[in-house]
Picture (cartoon, rainbow, N blue to C red):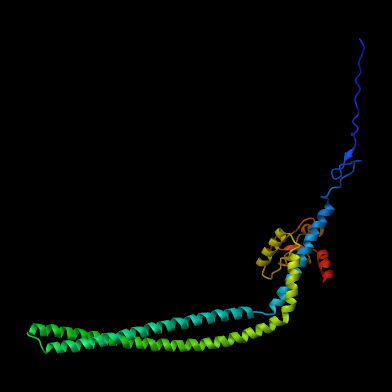
Amino acid sequence: MAKTTKTRKKDKNAGKVINPSTGTEGSPVDVPETTTEESIEKTVKSKLTSLYRLQTIDFQIDRLRSVRGELPLEVQDLEDEIAGLETRVEKFNNEINELETEISNKKQSVQESLELIKKYEAQQMNVRNNREYDSLSKEIEYQTLEAQLAEKKMKEFSAEVETRKEMVEKVVEELDERKKDLEAKKAELNDIVAETEKDEAVLIKRSEEQRNKIEERLLTAYQRIRNNARNGLAVVPVERDACGGCFNKIPPQRHLDIRLHKKIIVCEYCGRVLVDDVIMDIVKKEQ
């Protein structure tokens, strides 16, 4: 029986690589890894540099604003106080108007009582018996008491009106003084703002431009730390082996991690982002 041999066809594409972008054949190539330690270091270093650059700009803005001192708060306090005093004056004036209305009503009540008394007295001259006379006498007595009570209320209301008017005069006097103080404080604040306004506007623009270069997650964390920090510093350098924000000692191993730029390191005491002198020098050279 004769042996039959099968011949295998050789695949023409064996050992060849197809370029997915062009669809053409090519020789095998080595694809470099993108997650090397060097690329990680560059990425972290770039992020730290951007954060420290932003912190430097924001610190300059804070320093300019600190020149104003407590003046903005003093102006705000005076404005609030003036608003409160104006509310008090308005309240007193409303009370005065209400009291004067009550006085007018009581005057009308007295007039009506007096007219009724005259009417009843005239009727007494034409009574037919003692019963009618006694009834009219009681009405006259009642209206007399009503008139006396109304007059008493009028005096009380008049006294309250005078008291309110005196209080209004005092409050208005105090209000005028506060308005003068506010004008002086505003003038002083405007002078200071005018001196720093141009520089501040430039710095604010630079800060906004720098923020656009930082990823949102880092920017949110930066702003949160900055808001919680008393001095507004969210990114601080390591100085004399200590945190530049809270001045607590940093362990040698942690200091080494900061210098390697493999990850963003925060102070375990205050939570601020820590940078080394390399990052500081990069930002200083740009200024």
